[in-house]
Length: 229
Figure 1 (cartoon, rainbow, N blue to C red):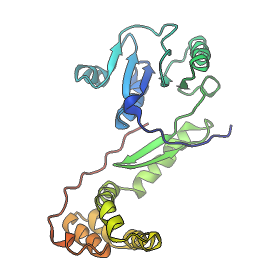
Figure 2: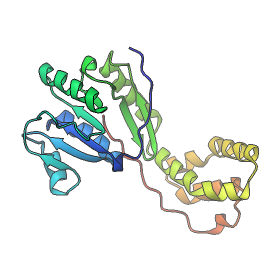
Figure 3: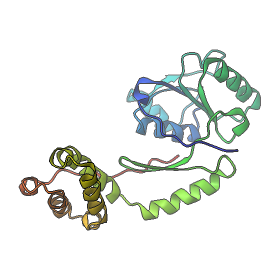
Figure 4: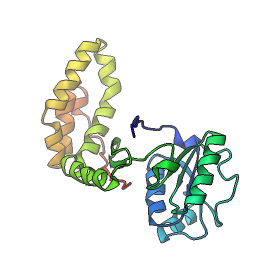
């Protein structure tokens, strides 16, 4: 099966539904929450964490079995069911209402497959085997976790903080492109990896030609958090 990889945006304004309340559903909900999605869970039972998120008003819970019509008005749906009859009904309903549907480990009843995702703050790397081997996708994700540590979240935060100032000080596109290349090849990432955020910020500001910014306090950097899929 050939796939076309995409990253969905603006999920906070979309109606997303997860059908199931087991550990797999919990992982799917966690991934959606990481993308600021508005999530409704349909299940008679929930894991402890899903229950906590309901209590914290992070998700909405419909405490019942899935019913016909539950996908009406939904933009994206994920089901963790192993019931092939229910999966078939969900697929038919998704096609009727134009819903993006993934049934876990059930490619024939899905119209998209979810990759194994590694997150480091704004950095998201998704691996897909087109449904052939989720286990291999997870293994590759684990290897990527060893390569891209939490410092990449700090690095992206720093680059994001500099972006507007760089654009204002360097209007020429080619000059900006060369500058970003210098930043990527510099020791900034190594400094962040070693925990020296102040020196990393000063070096980045210097390379960006923002000498006035180099004397200002270092920004507060947040460590990246992996969201399992």
